[in-house]
Image 1 (cartoon, rainbow, N blue to C red):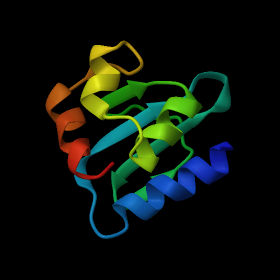
Image 2: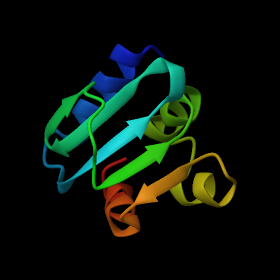
Image 3: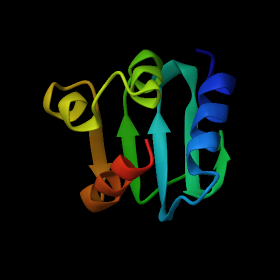
Image 4: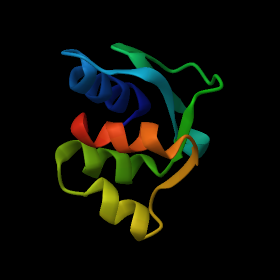
Length: 93
């Protein structure tokens, strides 16, 4: 998936209500997806929680093929910042 497709997929997930805190998905050279509430952009801004992963792993997670906890435990997902914010994402993605 391209950055635009991933951004739209995240936007669809948070459309009915996101979380109050800010989250940035750092996808390396592909770019970033910044989420605050139901607002989603490709801004590379400071966030309460930054999740670093590959675009492929994010795509699998959004499709429901990759469990976020398993991804974290397997080293496919790294969390920097407020871990409780990352835990809230489980109900969204």
